Image (cartoon, rainbow, N blue to C red; front, side, top):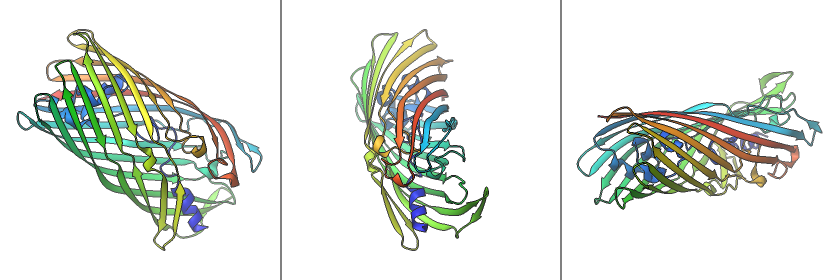
Length: 412
């Protein structure tokens, strides 16, 4: 029983419900790029925040620059037609499964010479908070899931020629997660907490055909995490939780995905600019999860996530010398299909609709605000299909998300 509980809890610790991009990836790292639905993010290089998507874009940030921003994420996820086939019990609709959160981002850069540039960025590339009511009929499959990943990235970029820039960065990532199951009387329940610090890298190139047209290519490596933590097992009895065994030291290996991005940016004239983006996220690296305790116990679950594609188109209109209007739309594929969808990850394909404004207060100071509405396709979940037929739950999920981004950019 001890190994089974460890396996069940940790096998879903990172499969969080309905993040703002496929899987649990947070794309919200730039209010300016968000206004165009991240179209052209790899080539845009309009301010310092774009270095998250391509470190080579640092060469377009002359002098010393500071960027401070954040995105308020307001999701709405609802589970309908919830049914426990084993107990023959139909549950009520569950609202507000995914909780609101703020994703901050900040960066600073310094021009070292005519061709060399250095920067330092702080981002939250993965994260989500999901919580069901403890009384819902699928509580044994999970109630609370919380994940936060904070990445510190020092970067360096070099202008190799007047047209070609190259850049690279080191990703130092701290990850923390917590998962609980429901308090069901007469059942054994588990909560798991773990954390890790590991590293990866990124590299990119930016080629400027002329003052109006540029293309970008960027790659972020996968990061192999070894998560260490504890599992607490409790017996639910008449609404109270009592220890059923000592806390267990556990660890697990999990790999966050590599990403390949390509973007193009083009000024049509002094007023209009257009841009496009393609990104491939290699979620297939999350094929299985090995869970071990320090007594030699080993368990493996097969997640079988799939690689996803992200496509975006955008445009910007320069209203006057101070105001710029942005708009864009995107299509984002889900990392999890029907055969691997669970209450913790009712993931589905989604459409993005974005707009935003840039205000250039003076030569040194500018502001960006953006708004995005994300519509997610309906998702059907059947735990019998995912390998949990012993306690079968079915449900239909409808999801949508609103994003509100803001940032400040200052040049010294």
